[in-house]
Image 1 (tube, rainbow, N blue to C red):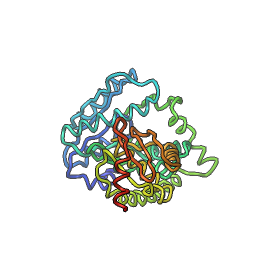
Image 2 (image 1 turned 135 degrees about the vertical axis):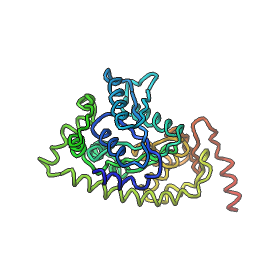
Image 3 (image 1 turned 60 degrees about the vertical axis):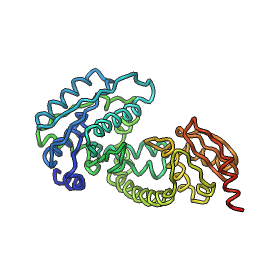
Image 4 (image 1 turned 180 degrees about the horizontal axis):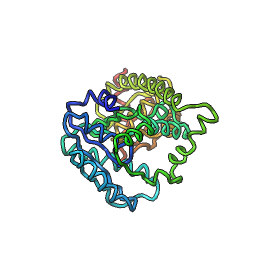
Length: 328
């Protein structure tokens, strides 16, 4: 397993690594693998969300385990008021922000996260329940980029059971997070009933992962095409495109173009949900309209569509007159 990990991490071997370590079996296994194969000692980052009574003890557990391996460990605190709704999403956003901020401050551009194959399958099933399209069903990408940092997931081909066996075989202690047993969370409910797909319907984990790999290839092809279409978009603080830019493409392409433009102009980490993009595209297609989505204002005037951050001017008339004179 160490060799598989090293093979995956080969493109980053000459760069400093930070490791996101929660203390669970997945991240503790990753920390031990990284300590064994990294060209230089990685830095361990543990985020204390302050949501559980045991959170402080978990942080000290991770610190002690890291120091035993000769690794520096930094505890990052999520301070301030916490939302009463959507706490999972808010905690995830805060966790990534704290870790990428640390990496940026300390000149680290590679952050390892311990998502594994079971996380992929659960993500697929949750997104299937939401009616997601190709992008949601293709699952997490092995490598993404956020705030100038490569987010690398080297364990996506390893199962939770494999990683727990690795911990047992190597005498690695880990924390069992009781939130993983809390059925108030959709992911926990999905995890508890997942075996029904295999035992009663014959849909094995391997077949789900194969479907995800196939969908990932489709996603890659769409990404390549959309990237080429966006090459000539310059200033993303104010984007004006002809309506044909969105509507002369197949619908899936039009949705991805719109999502990418909103993400760029709004300066967001993620694009709006598919159902929101569907409604926006349909609304824009009907004619002259102004609406908001993803922290942006969208306005259509005749054959032009303007996208600006909320609070910016939404005048399209000058651009329309310029285009009209140019065509004469």
